[in-house]
Amino acid sequence: ERLAHPLSANEELNLLASIDHFQSGFYGMRKFMTTPIPFPLVQMAHTLVMVYVFTLPLVFLGDSSSNMWEDCITVFLLTFGFVGLDATSVELDDPFGDDANDFDVGAYAQYAVDDIIIMINDADGVEWADSLRYKMHADVSEPVDEDESAGLLNPPKHSFLWRMGSYQSGAAAV
Image 1: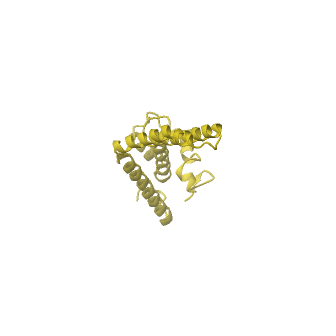
Image 2 (image 1 turned 30 degrees about the vertical axis):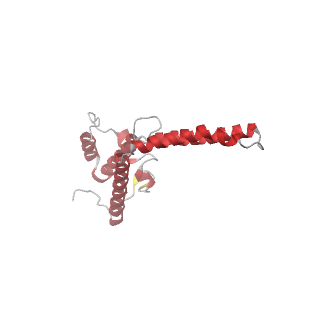
Image 3 (image 1 turned 90 degrees about the horizontal axis):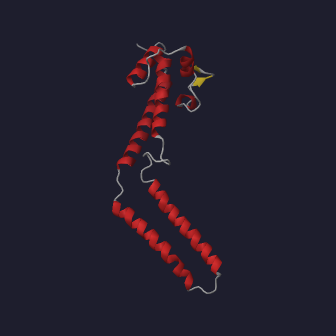
C-alpha cells in the first residue's frame, strides 16, 4: 500500500461521500449554467413589468375616496418592487459570470484544491502534495518550508476538513 497510515473504513466512506456531494454540486451548477432561458420569455417578462408599472396609476384615477399621497406612495412601492424583481431576475440570469454580484467560483475551487492538498499531505507526505501542486501549475519552484507545512497541517476554519471534524487541535485524527 502507498499510504503510510491507511484510512479507516469510516474515513474512507466519509471521503467517498464528500466526493459524491462535490460531484453532485458541480453537475448541478453545470446544468444550471448550460440551460438557456429563451429570449422571448425574458423579453415578454420585461414588457409585462413595464406595461403593469405604467398602467398602475390609471387604476387609482377612478378611486375618488382615497388620498392622492397614499396613492402616490402605493404606486411608488409597487413600482419599486416590480422593477426590483425585474433587475434581480437579470442578475440571476448568469450567477457564475464575471459581474460584481456573481458567485466567486474560483475561490470555492481554490478551497477544494487546498483541502485536497491537505488530505494528500496528511496521507502521503509533503512530496506528494508538492507533486500535486506542480501538476496543478502552482508555484513549486521552492520546496515547502516548515511554515507552509504547518499551514497545511493546520487548515483554516473555512476548510472542508475542518468543518467535517477531521482535525483535532491541529493534528490529523487517525
